[in-house]
Length: 454
Image (spheres, helix red, strand yellow):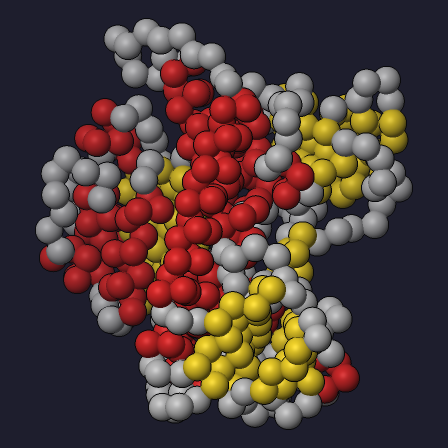
């Protein structure tokens, strides 16, 4: 098609957009200031899951989780970190190879957007028919007394700890916070979580979040909800973390303090304000095609703050590049699943029960506890599958799971919802036995009051 596209950012949204643009015949230039793969591959999803995989295996071996199999386990933390780096390097190297194969021209440096769909990087100025901003996000920093003390960490620093601390206080009980809580407590670190909201994982279905909290506390994690950080002071060998919980002052001691209160769009210093790009608290405002207030300038992934998930960023990137090349005239919003890699895992797609109630939608709920699932019992795991459907037609409004391997199962529910499927479609899909996925069909039957194994 003879178009020239500039993509700023080499994370999931950026490199996927670049490859698709090249496939569509565009001359594609990708600008990355740091490492290809972005936060996800370098200091986010991938390295976190490597460490969680190791911690889960270590925990199960140490606690003899399989009856009749007696084991001893020794943790070699430097070897775990080395494996993490090997995985990261392999995947980021793979991204580099894919871009090279697609003949995408990669530029290293910080990009500044100029009028007339131009981008300055280093001493060069590039012009294009369209620009796609895929600049990602950064850890949110919060001001508090003692924020500059040694031992205060963000998630990036926590992934690179050369030695495990004996204790850690995690400020923030969202996805990042509870994943790190799982990681640390499985490795034998005394772990505390502090969350401002009444429950951990405030964006997750409340029933599912409560089950995770019960599991975490059962594993020894101390959790303070409706609590906020007021400051940190240096003590003897530990940090003293000061909290306010309902007007009552509390103090907890920890060797390290991990601040995990979320992420913010990476948009500063790029010249967007000077261009007049419409923004809201640092997030770039976009339309259904992910086009900004300036024609030909798009923003995808975390920088538009619509949904800060790598797979959502990839889909947005594909939509934006398609629109910039004259394809996909109508923007299409597919249901996006969300996953939390705790133990047990959490996966969901669609509306939570709280959101359904808030919208005033008539609905029916089907639940299936994994205590009735043969494969879950074999693996010594528990959990719940929960389905919310439209009361009149049975259209699926939301699916929420907590249990083993549910992050692998949620795609079935997402596909069904994308096809505007009903609970009958899930019921008639034959699930292999014995699998945890059978529970999805059982929960679907429970919606109609016809569950077999519950």
